[in-house]
Image (cartoon, rainbow, N blue to C red; front, side, top):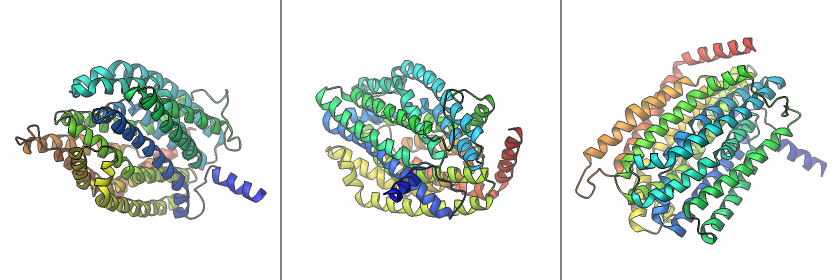
Length: 472
């Protein structure tokens, strides 16, 4: 019994990836993270299923078209989360308990103020922005209700995602998984209760999300307070350390800006999509739910690569960083190819889960087939970008994202839409939107591979880390 208890404790303990085989460390860290991402996508998909099956196609489209707006408002949190994960993993790898404790306390304080700002801006701007984007009239009210409630409770959702990132930076990807499973079960139950019993429509789905993620945020915070063998989370450490805050923002803001870049082009592409009609908006919503599952390994191994690299950089084990990058790429490609094949074989069946409307199912299946090969390319981008971020080089991925999304994907989407105008599709064929995305993903992968192998960023990253260490 004692041996079993000790094995469970080791499984839930922060994982030190500065020793042992890199491949083993990456896989053991990634499994709970992958399951967690699967659970998160599952309850996102359940949201869509409940909305589509119990409320209707217009409600399904209304929820989907809010995501570019939501992601734009969450850019600040993305920056904090990325910077926190890098800093925490490096302090953990260096075994610097004092700085690690100060870093976690600083992250918690920054998140609070970011939540206050995002709530005020989001609640105020949601409905006017949806109107500005030309949201179909039959979807406007439902989309507005959904966004306003999400932004009203965004601080709880943000704490869950950021504190989960802190725990992963410590090498603990298992606890966030458990808390996410709690959130998933609670979210599904509340979805069904609010929508079918209380007839709350899209507002009920948003409220269920806020409640479930806020509870999981509290569980993450409780977990951090109990890691007393690694760090201290108490009144003394829950203050903002100016030096660490600047470092978090310096390392994280390029990722936040990247998120903002993606979101701005997403908002502009959403405006184009809205002009194509309600059927296209609804089909795209269903496609994006399937897309979330296909993207899941890519984001998972990108995070794993960042954490592994950050820990080994902190431990000054750059030899392991190089081997870890190769191993992470192998894992990513195997998973991405497998999922891409599954989408090609079962795309139509996946679409039919969300709606029984034949036109939407057919259109969505065509979109998925068009995107399929892009998931492999995006996996390459995420893994190599994860390694660079773990080495403090956050600017190169940001520059690549800007080129790919603003200079390539956005103008290409509008150009292809203009070139594919027909009497049946007077504003352009829906394939223009997804073909432009596929081209952007492939281009992004090519640029990432090129700049990753140039090597100049490594010298800059190592020099920047040495400077940070000297200042501290």
